[in-house]
Length: 316
Image 1 (cartoon, rainbow, N blue to C red):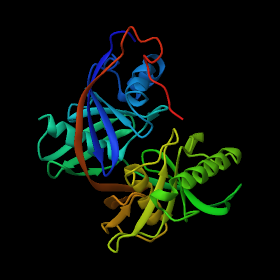
Image 2 (cartoon, rainbow, N blue to C red):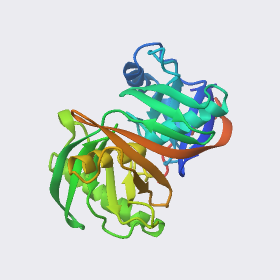
Image 3 (cartoon, rainbow, N blue to C red):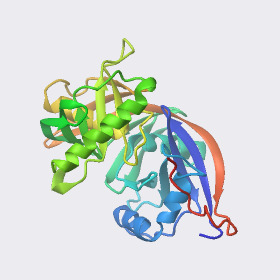
């Protein structure tokens, strides 16, 4: 740990922070991004903790390690991480990375491709701050699952893949407002615990590590409002790119949204994504549009004289 100096650029996408590591990250070699993510987790997890956790970060920070892509048609490779581990794909983080790369002069207005551990994502940088991403194939996996959640009662939801695994509750235990974030978090954690207890998983036994509640939109021109609990216990300040992808997949499977129709998804803080999809044989290809803004340049350091906080810690 001694002597680490990590250069980062911070941004937010519709309120949700992204910290892109542009230099000084772990030496992961040149294998596939899937393999490099595994090496990151096995040998260099202290870099993740240093970047995402206190005292240099906080629970809502999502990291994006900038990597050389294997596919030379891609402008960048990205490995996403957060306060407790690693994320397959991150929609808001991809939007934030595109705006950050443009800020750095690495890409210009127009079409680009980014490589991630779960596949290649198409990116349309529409302006200095507005980005449309075409996510990986998403799909509804199990629909209309009934759960009896202690303290919450009977709820119904869907399991879907949008780049991460989601349980999408058809309703919410309370109004989706910032004032209710504590209660929403507690209830989402109870839903997640019930899924584990009942052995409900994604494909091939994958953990369902994101929980979404839905309710009526507050804005007259939006379709829905959500609350998303992410791995590590932080809530998504944005409407969640992979969560919105999973939502579109469920709407498509239920015949409630046609290909090409726009779905406006609000977050619990009132920010929004505009989304639509193309149908495929086994699911959908979602398109998500959002806005991101650069907020800081920094060098994160691990002081060799610091005996207590070289790699960071998770706050309460």
